[in-house]
Structure formats: structure tokens, C-alpha cells
Length: 100
Image 1 (cartoon, one colour):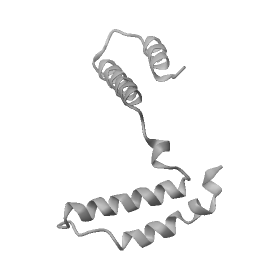
Image 2: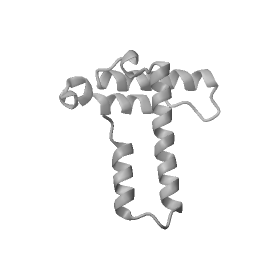
Image 3: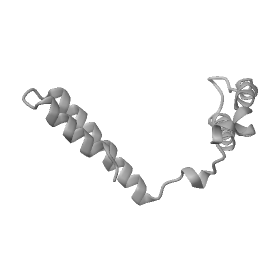
Image 4: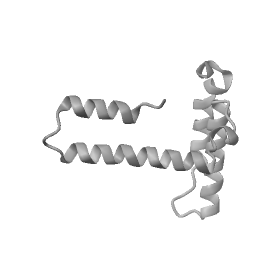
């Protein structure tokens, strides 16, 4: 389990150090980008991941977008529906929220 690694155990200390490096709200975009890159590096190291591990291919982004859209649509429909039984909604949600 990666939550027991020394890199993960060191995460709180790394974040405390980084806290002192937070740019001022008036800082340039480049400073904020650098800060964001350092934050990303700290988390990736703690979780023993690489950028490639968390990067998605275009097809995967499309699949994720479609999946999130379907779930958003499901929730919108559920909020506005009156005549559909609770059991029918549970069955529909189970089908949409389960990945084969």
C-alpha cells in the first residue's frame, strides 16, 4: 500500500515547506505556474506516480467527458422527475455508475 511509503509519510513536511513559498495574490502567472508545478511534483512523488501515470489519451478524455455528462444528466433528470419510482432510479443509477 503506497500510503505507508516513506515518500508519503514525508508529504506533510513537504507541504509545510511549500506553504512558505505560496506566491502573493499579485504574483506573475509564471510564479503561480512554478508553484503549481512544484506542488504537483510533491504529490506525484508522495504517491509514487509519474505524469504519464495520470495522463489520459484523447479517447480516454472523450470517454471520461461522456461518462461525466451522462451522470450529470442523470442527476438533473432525477431532480426534476416526479413520476419515476425510487427503485427505477436506483436501477438506472446502478447501470450508469458501474463500469464493466
